Image (spheres, rainbow, N blue to C red):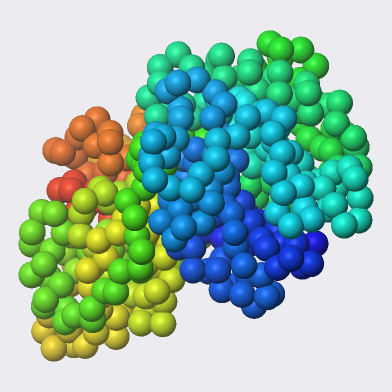
Length: 466
């Protein structure tokens, strides 16, 4: 059996390519939308992808299931759960597909996959027990999706906090408790292959180790240990969950109704700085500057958003750019395709053009006008906050804010800021901070773009809170 875990660092997402080397057939589990990466990997191992499936309707990226279906590959999808969360795009379609239910089995060559309904994170969530039929007659591991992570379980609040299904949070947590209770009876030797690792917003305490076992998680997973009673588990699992990024609601909608067929990656053209500036004068166009934050603060095109090409790139872009806006990048040429892939994975397909940081320097050296944002530290803030013309905005998570914050600060998580700007005063200067300055930098750029007066606090808040 060929087994490959495929990790996307920015989304902290695991897909899995599993193949039967005897027959040359393979399946991909939980693929992202740019499916060419999986096809190339399979070909490098003399395998052919004959099927694709996923554990649930994802909230944090667009699924590649429809892309595979468009290419004539058989796709499997859960038909468990309630009527509100079904794969609408598959019903009655002309695709080669099969719906899956608890207890179902299907083969890929000599490998058998048994479906286990594991609801709670989502109503339709399923896991797969994998048996290598060439070597054994019992499962060796479990593809657990967003049910069991290393060190955590999938959060049950997203249908309410991200997708707007009011009143579903507690009932989902109770459902998850029942799934965890069933997990406790599984053989301890079973390996656990999760859908996400550390850095994902699909849980609150995910580990960075890529795989685990049932026995290890029973002993050391605090969320599972909290399942000593239903109410204790519900209280524990709902407390301190991070605010979901704004784009999660779109991903839920599109993965349920059917992501737009991509077929090929966008090919943005290289443009002059003047051309990008002119394009940005249209309301539906956005400049996304991917340089590091201090370079951006020192000089950038007026109205540009900031999203450094780091781990939070997708989260920032998805939270600050609306789905139909056209995107113009400031980016190193060597990273254009990387950025395009990151953006289309969260449904931001309109990547129209780019210029490089060197182009920006050349533009400024030849008299082109750049904007800047004032940088201050917490020593400056101590003086400025005494002035009623200034207003402190804390863009950390609510759970961080509750542990300690500056007096008078308003807390809005940076991933929800675009939706809550009307809570901020336009007649005051906003002093924007987070824990270390990273989240505050992208938030400051957004607020300046949207007409607020801003001073960016590039400092560590622990210096003044403790």
